[in-house]
Image 1 (tube, rainbow, N blue to C red):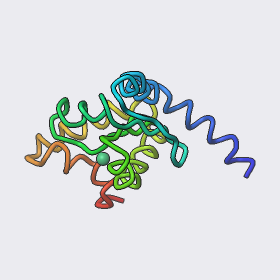
Image 2: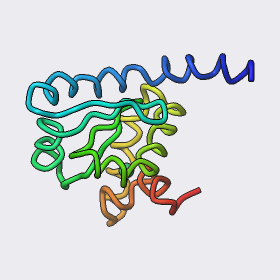
Image 3: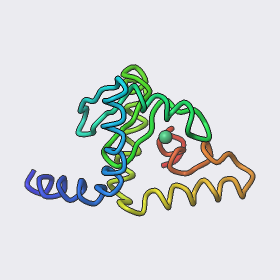
Length: 133
Ligand SMILES: [Zn+2]
């Protein structure tokens, strides 16, 4: 228990650059009719600009995405359905810290170079879908 108490703040700090990036969605989502809540130790931002971003601004439409300890979702239902998947990504951010996004994009690039799909064959996504140890 004592060890866990020391690890948790360190994990949040290690992932904090990505978490700050995710928190940038908060004011935009709130002023456009979205909302925010905390579930399982992660901030969940949904609706408004968050929905627009996930539907229109990515290479593929997403129901949710994770940045550090922030999960951005189209709406509350999307967050409820994708929570287990997104929390695998939360743990990946806790493991990789500031190197997570470069590693994620490198994995997408390598998957694409091998002839695979940049999203579904990305090793971080395969782990989140339970296809990779
Ligand atoms: Zn994912």
